[in-house]
Figure 1 (cartoon, rainbow, N blue to C red):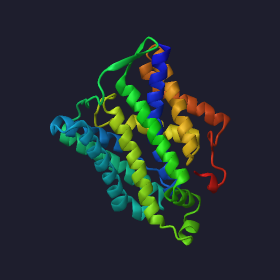
Figure 2: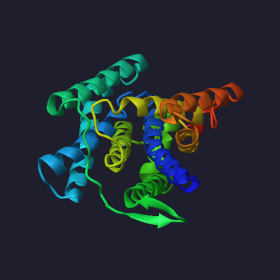
Figure 3: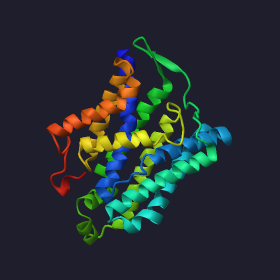
Figure 4: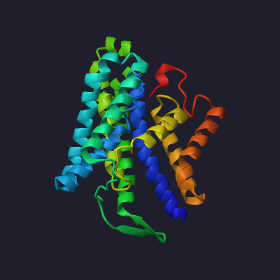
Length: 290
């Protein structure tokens, strides 16, 4: 059972990490709380379902379509609805919440509110130390690790990453130094949407696909971001795995744990914030944001 717990904790923490890093990246650079963030996970999962079961497309072509379509929806949403009011935090929160609700209602109109299943990317399982682990779980862990490594390389080793970090530190100074801030903000929104889409693609075969599947992850991601420290990508990454481990532990080791996992994970967040109100990697100075 312990081996299965470790696998589930890695999968849950990894998916939360993809979502939390994207959320923190957008918050750190654009200074906005994107409440529609996890709805892109839901959209990508539905694209997977539609392309494979309704259109009968190859699984890898379906993945490409789901990723590209979700990122394009994210970019269009930003340009059409958010960019002009980005400086008004409450307005942005209301608009992004409205967008998420619209996406949800569109999925209900198109597919109904029933639970759906997306195809398994790699069927079968392997036995590890006496425990059967599906290839889908192993693929999810591998994809999460690869994507997070790529994000670190982009942020730390490329000119784009320098531009993103400079914009996060001070938008006005970055603009004076010749950085195209509008372009950086658009790219950041695209990266965040891509991370959410990848999370949706890898969990679609593991979770049920339904229009309300974005709500529970949104609550957990908000908790993780606050736990890690607002705007801290490193804090979000560590916080995601803390919450993932706690959630998996509750499910595996407590009676009725599947009904308590969210509440107990949030309780852990509250306890840590009581001890350390700024979170694990709370921001003291603007330049520490990323």
